[in-house]
Length: 466
Image 1 (cartoon, one colour):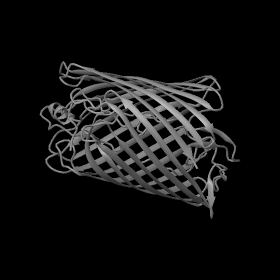
Image 2 (cartoon, rainbow, N blue to C red):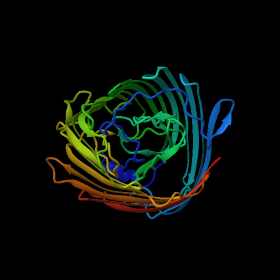
Image 3 (cartoon, one colour):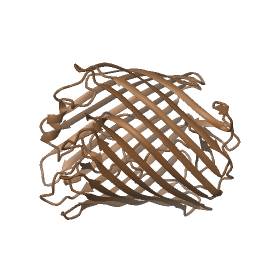
Image 4 (spheres, rainbow, N blue to C red):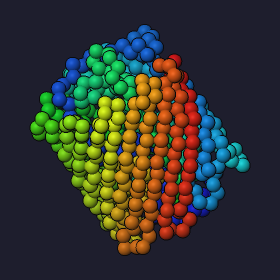
């Protein structure tokens, strides 16, 4: 079963196509990872007064209800889907830890009804288990198993699959701890912040339910002046319908992240991923990599920055290598203690061999954008974003993102531009209840037929944490 956009996708399957679904789920192959300044003390996370405690476990159940309106839900030119949609999303995280062993269980379910003639309904869910073993304060092993079901599928799959986010408590480089509910606390248990929201910048999708099974193993070693993380994962994705754009596949990914201080302010870092994709015929198998190295700074005065340079490439069975340089950077400005402004830039160049078969895999771009480009296309892709977070009061928070993407097809007059933005206002009525209103805008302008589109989207939600 497909939306009317299926015909559109078939018309330019080898060209730039769909949006990423969530802004912070891309492979983390370019972002600086600031190394720790000291080795954390270790031990179990402090008791969270906002969690439900049961027999040594900390439970974080929640329920979110929302209503949405859009004039073009899936950024299509023909066959627009518009109107109101309604949904709910219960979720629960359970965590147990004795300081050496830690087990985290997570599950969620999201049900949305869209305003279509045939009443399209999405019922998606995820279940994750994470097991951690920390025999030493500076050494941590973890394994993760995840099952995900999605109703909507992208026309192109990411050549380097996005890692499954762990919901376990995480120790930050400065020693603070991020709890499963996103609260940031000090080692003594004092609340000092909250993880920022994710942004959806629009998506172009088909209705083709699929199941994804992921297994990940990771080892993390801390040093007095640095950190090294090595991970490997296996993904199996099975689609309900075998379409030209959506075929069952497996992906094996190997990744590394390392960062070391070279002075009181500066650190060097590297980040890379290599994926072996095994696709169902007639789509050829592919080997894909993206590796960068860079220089970053600790916060100095009101600023923080990083810059990177690297290379990405891919090879489909029977064809020469494709690839090119990548470079970019980040800049953060803290004008006041309650206001943060950030800027991101990424440039990815891909030189593909002439005559290569159209690929159903997309280049990995570490910044959110409503555009994707096939591995078999020669392109120069530039993406930039500007973000802002302002803490209006202890109960009011405003977040915003504005971005621009340009894809220039090399040796061709074809091009695509995308302008996108989102603004979010959050009101914490109570420590358990949060109201959120969000507005999103996305516009694609291109000289490729049937690709220009725009989208306005408004969402209102209420979230209750038990």
